[in-house]
Length: 603
Figure 1 (tube, rainbow, N blue to C red):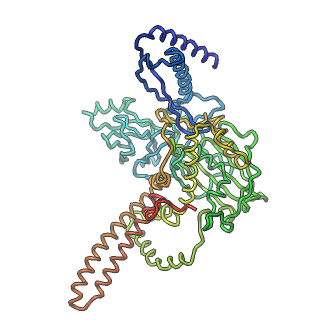
Figure 2: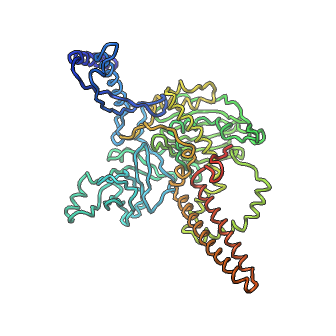
Figure 3: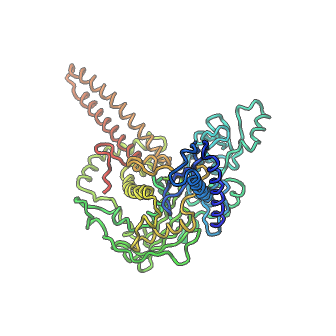
């Protein structure tokens, strides 16, 4: 209460004044609490406290307006305010404080961590949620996924460096300790002097790793980021966000990327559909909006929060179209906190137009997982922003490269470890599948700019943003929900401080490996096989060049030049194959061009 805080501050200030007056002629020690402000959220920049004691003399604390007493009073009052702010924003990731009925609890919800098809079923999978480091693996004895804290209780080495044993336990690679996944119980301490000592160590609660509830639903592995028996019970009765969608789950596979931006700008982008008419539009050679390549924007006139829908569990917004092809549609976007945005579009006749399911998981400050699944019910629903028409040169190039393409397909089917998995990876990372990165690059560059500018302005969003049109209502709705029901910011796990600068280089923003490849077993497998192909092509070119030289020398004596010519041509073809394999590998690593100016052409 404000009166109690004021009384406490005055009392402490009087005590500080008396102390400073009695010691004005001697040297004294004072401690100044410094507070760093970092992060971007619904209220601008949020404080996280970091105390640092610095030794100062009484003379240093004196100032021209009242000496040490006045400065001491100021320091005490400032410290009390910072202490109150820090206390109100501290969250225990495993035993979160009881929120009010209108407040959303970030640690009492299901979060999607990976599409199951992206996970390695034979090895530990490293992941994060709310700053917590987790490790997931498949227990082959029960065919169930397990999730533990990615920290061995022995010496705190990452368990994700370990390996899955035949009995379904996860072994730490540092000293061989093993853990079962249901409760995190330690099952083996190899360096124990005898069986009794090992049994004693395994029975100790200190040898247990923290286990977290998890489940597989709608093709995704979900995690509840609180451990303990109560968490197991509560999570068992809580639904995952996708199961709450009125339209049911959508068909097809989930796409997933880890955005190099924070939770707030990522969600804002989703509730701002009209940005597509500029950010994802096609532009002509003069850098102007293409009249032929775009549908043409239409000002949004309908965009509002559905009456009575906003509460701690989310909200619903309803809006109309924003270009000439969807001007008559009506859309409903349902936000289910903290991770799901489900959109349903219908046309003027009430027929389904487009369905979109988009999920988000805040992994750490400045990074957010995003999952997407779309179902276009009408041909005009997806315009294919960023694509281009097939030119005569494209057709000629496809004709010339047809033999090489057939040879590559034969190689994939015959010489790779898992042809089906490799083809899935190639569909994600190699052209034409990699063209989807272009759309994401456009979004990331814009969202990163927003996040950095909000950090630098040091203002609440209502002062930083100017939102005068109906098209801005979605952004305002999300920020309002964050303010009223979610504390204005993501509640990170204990020990995770949102105090790092959000500034990232363009290369970091366009890093495809961190965005997708490292999370996807299919892409990692394809990348590995492309590396093997490159090595084999280089080896073949060396042998063929040597053979060509041999045939050139010996053929001159017998007037036989053909073998040398053939060997040399095959060596050249092998070098071209190696270079092509390098280009394909680069598609999995970065959007920055491998050659020329290191800046992609996005428009």
